[in-house]
Length: 213
Image 1 (cartoon, one colour):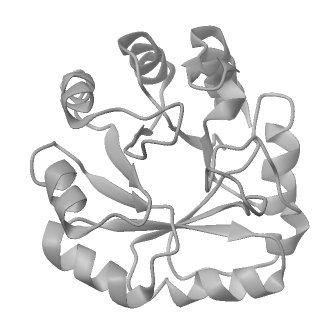
Image 2 (cartoon, one colour):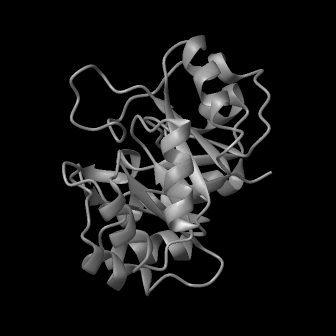
């Protein structure tokens, strides 16, 4: 069984091409100015135009207002919207009405209470992304190269497709998959040489490993 992969934080043609040629199922584009991986709508359009059919283009936003949601989702060929902030179920309902797009809600996991919270989003969202909870005061809600205790979700049952994120890299992917039971994973910092600087070699290595699991 191979593991499906989303490469997040795509911000260059080279990283995009490496991810596509390596077999990534999803590519994430970050619309959060504080992130070292952030892209503007103009930059994202040029990148998204390179993505072939069959690869899902994901827009990552953090507590976006209606204007920002419209600017990204109405003018770019986005397939899936990833909400990575503190969006409530009610807010997500509003965003779905604005965009008409399927939603993947990211939830930071640190304790069983966080898992219960993640389940609350299953009624409305098409996918759930389980990430490590960001440290208090952190500028970024994700992409912090941190993992969480995968045993917390090892026996969990979900009604919607879910994805594992948080500090994944080629060195811990096999253990993460074995412990958590994930069949779809999200990687960002784990395929970088420095924050926001994707490594084509690391992308290829991660994707090759995922195919072998």
